[in-house]
Image (cartoon, rainbow, N blue to C red):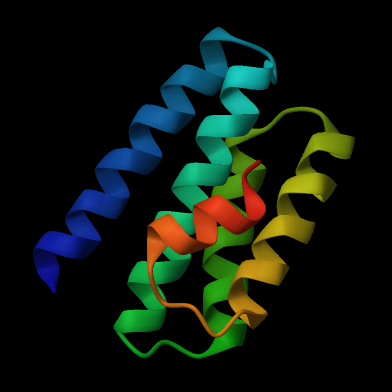
Length: 98
């Protein structure tokens, strides 16, 4: 469990550093969606509640994306991921990151 959370933190740090280098490029948007899918799947498997997942992933999105419209799009996708019954990151990614 600690390894999973540590991996999530490491991914967040990389995404944050990448966000500071490039201002919401399409590559950054795609990477953020993949990170959101991985984070949502991990937290679902750890049996976090939907509200806690939304709060955690929203803070990650806000820290990574600079443009408000892009944040809103990322949050919509994240909300769909949270509401989806799937608990697998690749399934969530295929459905919502295209």
